[in-house]
Image (spheres, one colour):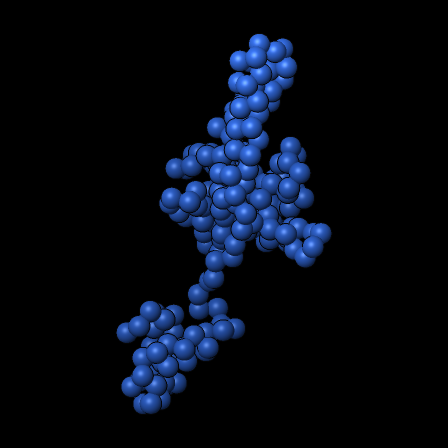
Length: 188
């Protein structure tokens, strides 16, 4: 039995599979995969977060905190008062990185679960545990927060950014599909 066999009821498998396909397991797998299209025998994960999630999580904060920190140290060594604004900016970006980055996740979902990944592990959370999803006002890129009824391995609240759609738009429909599973309205 191959990896797709579980998705097709036994009577359907026995009736539709020819002896030729039974001899060639790869052809059988492709046959079964083609016949599953359009049927609701399984659910498919949909990506809800942008492909740039890990850039925003790891690289982007360093693009600001590190240069401001270096400028602050350089100006401090020259005993200039201009070190203060650079130190404040470096402190602000550094503290934002420490607070925001651990909760910024790659998100996927299907009909039953919400999948959260922080690049090192992925957990799945049933939709009944999701309290609400709403837009985070303090972000230029459409960023949403997901709050849970009970704390998860990643905390009680996580953040994600939605992907671009076309050249100038964002895929807000993905958030509406997620809201339907929570049972609330979309807060776009």
